[in-house]
Image 1 (cartoon, rainbow, N blue to C red):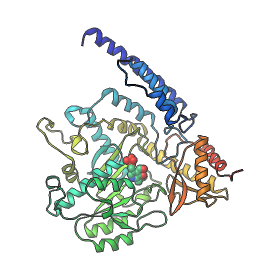
Image 2 (cartoon, rainbow, N blue to C red):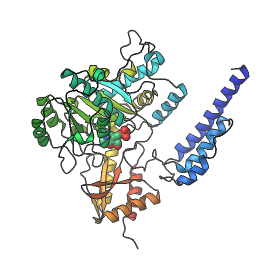
Image 3 (cartoon, rainbow, N blue to C red):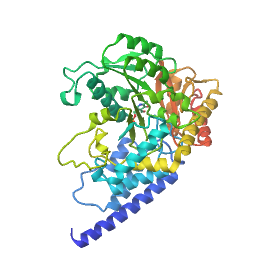
Image 4 (cartoon, rainbow, N blue to C red):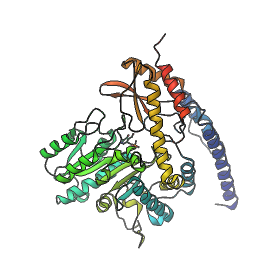
Length: 469
Ligand SMILES: Cc1ncc(COP(=O)(O)O)c(C=O)c1O
């Protein structure tokens, strides 16, 4: 590149970054006041963003500015304090800013030699997470895109270990002819566990389902009976935090029965695992550390920007064997025990450990616990405000951050209320079906939500729940 071009590239980068900073700053500053759901239709967005593929270049600053202007009306303010859809965290300041640096640095977190900083940050943040969540200190850690891929990573480790014990090298020989694996799930298993199992070669129709109780918790007595009927290598998938009710499976009882049978216990704890970070909530996950593997998200309750998931196992050798690959050019660093790509399903990878590290450093142990406890208190406040209206029923025990709301004991009135709340755009929440009836789902997972946000949102829900006319 000629000197003049290099100078222009630097000026371009300066201008684009300054523009992104300005636009991002406006967005962040307006987060609490923006309409929560998008105002643009898909067609408006196509018109604003589309057109023919450009023939030639446009200045980066202009591109960023136009993108921000065109995409703006199509953005959903998921980082704002009144987004209660799905289970969605916001983006804490340190996490967001560190994530910007991760883009500017553009490190490949595959190998130590590609980025010693990314590798060491994963190592440190991983150890902090293990401690914070109360997992065994020797647990292995993987930084993934989300809990779905964390479930995949952990279940691939389970498959490796159980088949190894049965004398089968699954990485070398695949699944054809392998000893059959039995996988047991609760009736309320999250769909991403089923999706992850598909990827490890366990079809959804082959899963053995264990009944759950009225809150969605796997029944340990039923699991014991099921385990007594199956032979051979077995994985049991339990859950910390039901996606609808927030309920926890009884881990101690489940771990007892798995231990008696030598089954691998995996825990999908996309958000519920974070209860382990709080003195007040830890009882929900009693016994969880006895599992063989765990999956969770940082982009949910840790409020790290997308995408960021975490897998842990109590069997580092199995974990590594399931994930690692070798090629002559993939240079391993002598004396460095942890090569990041040995633990994840990907090779080249965004250095998402920086944002996790920055979040843990910025909040500290107490800050994480406060955030989790605050969200739970706000969920209880939501439930109390809503159930004061005689036409509204709260369908779940609000033990965590999830609230299920039903209007006038009617599917139609509940669906109508959800639609009206969404249209008003003060807050956003979605719907679900719980035990055969339609319900509104509220998930309080954002660090910045206040009591005033909950009260304002509860008022919007109460308005939306009024009978028509
Ligand atoms: C219990 C549970 N497990 C797994 C997942 C999947 O997480 P992700 O979409 O981050 O991969 C979710 C998502 O809501 C969840 O609630």
